[in-house]
Length: 111
Image (tube, rainbow, N blue to C red; front, top):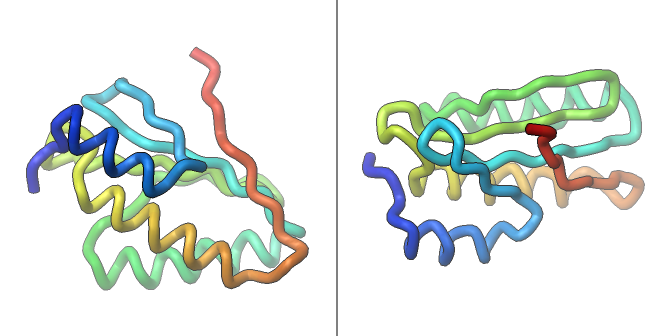
């Protein structure tokens, strides 16, 4: 898997506007999801885990109660790849199917 070029990255990011790009570690994307409660956050993570295992591409994530922070990068490519974009799109689809009471927020990092 190859790292996305600047042009490829810009085009790909337009398809996942809630995800934020950071140049660190060769390029990565991240997003914070805020769900109703811990049970919903855990169910969300479980659905992502099942998809990630099938696709053999795993997120970096952190969960605190109802928040799930997800970072995607492809270590083998040395940065952001099409695999990250595809997983982000799948995560967005999973999130969209959770129900109307769920809110998502963009995760912004303090540097």
